[in-house]
Image 1: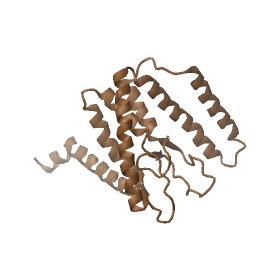
Image 2: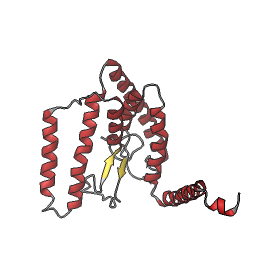
Image 3: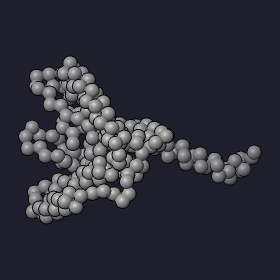
Image 4: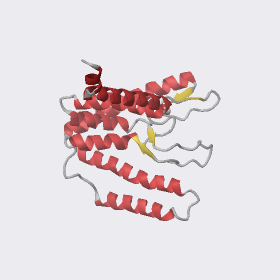
Length: 225
């Protein structure tokens, strides 16, 4: 193959473009905070594993039940430094892990049409409305907006819980997952007490040798949902 034929080969330029994109992606990932790297790796492992099972709907339901015990929040914007007092989550645009697994459970095993309570729907709508109404006069309007975004995220979790547990076998699956997380949490809390530090799924390590540890969620330093 001559040089002209080589340069005219579209597969060559496709490979060049793919290699360049892959290289830029590696650089970008290397600059990302640990929370994004951990989330990307977890998603790349868990999502194919769920889809390859014989019953992806039940696998997604199990992942959803497990995620509710994991103290992992996906911060879409950089959160400010936490304060000793007066902290009210979220302080940045963020989504709890459970809202993402809830969407997966609904897509793969949800009962259609979805089940929901009119009372819960009205309550969630009123909460979002009153929060939004307080934003214009607030000294922290962005934090108010973050709370408005959080309401539908929690509502999706409610929809998934109401629409994916369809029979006794689904309920038994959830019960077993919750019992497994209880065992896991006990093991994690024992390790954290032994090490004198808390740690999170995002790779954060918080040493607290002289203070009482405050546990919450699986591998989390604050309470989960």
